[in-house]
Length: 223
Image 1 (tube, rainbow, N blue to C red):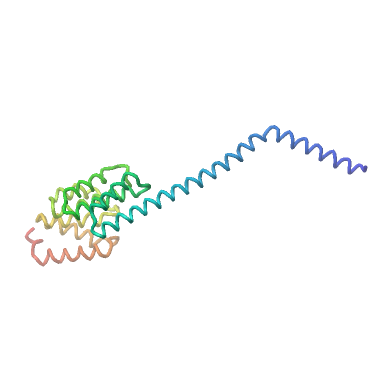
Image 2 (cartoon, one colour):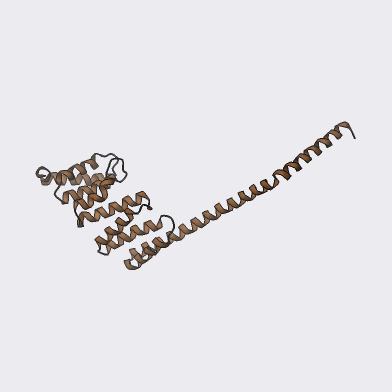
C-alpha cells in the first residue's frame, strides 16, 4: 500500500467516524424535522382540499337556492338560504343572508327586509364591504318606505370622501332628500356625484338627470 493510499484510507475513516458521530448526535433531530415537514405538508394539502371541497359544496347550494328564487319558489329558496347561513363555508353564509333579505323584500315585506339587512350591517364578524352593501340595500328600501333620517342613519357613515361606496350612498341620500322636499340637500348630493370623477358612469348619469329634473321643475329655487 502506498503512502497516498494509506492517507486516503485514514481520511475516509476519519470522515466516516465524524459522520457517525454527527448522526448519533443529530440524527433523531433530523428525522424529526423531516417527519414534521412531511406531516406539515400533508396537513396543508389536506386542509386546502377540505377548504376547497367545503367552498365548492357551499357554492353549489347557493346556486341551487338562486335557481329556486329565479323559478319563483321563494319559500323554498329562503329555506335553502337559511340552511346555508347555518352550515355554509367561507363567505357563503353572509351572501345567503343578503340574498334572503332580498327575497323577503320581493315577497312584499319591506320592513322585514330592512331588519334583515340591518342585522347583517350590525354583525361585526361580517366583511366590511358586505356590511356596507347591507346598509345601502336597507337605505334604498327606506327611500320609499321610511324617512330621510331613516336613510341617513344607515348610509351617511359611508358617504364620506374616500369611501368606495360613497356614490351609491349619496344617491340614496339624494333620493330621500328630494322625496322629503329638501331640494337644496338633494342638489348638493347629486352635484357631489356629478363632480366626482371616480363615480361610475351610470350613477353620474342618473345624478345629472336628477339635477336637470330638479332645476327644470323650479324646485331648487323654491328650496
